[in-house]
Image (cartoon, rainbow, N blue to C red; front, side):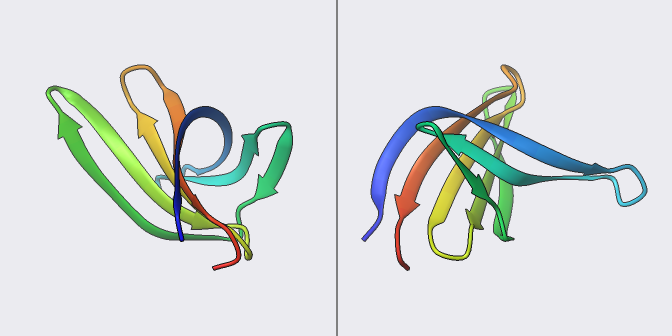
Length: 84
């Protein structure tokens, strides 16, 4: 069962200028680091003029839903599902 979190987190990105991509690869949350093994879904939507990115990722054990706000450049951890 997923748990709603809604906390600010830090995310390290891998950037590829050839493919023109930026992919989250490391999540820092509550003093721990989670190495992202796979990015599942990625989609965008707008809140007014602000573009929001949503990433569904896993470290191989736990699933995370991350939100990136392009106006503030801030990340939030929205949901966690452990052992899924």
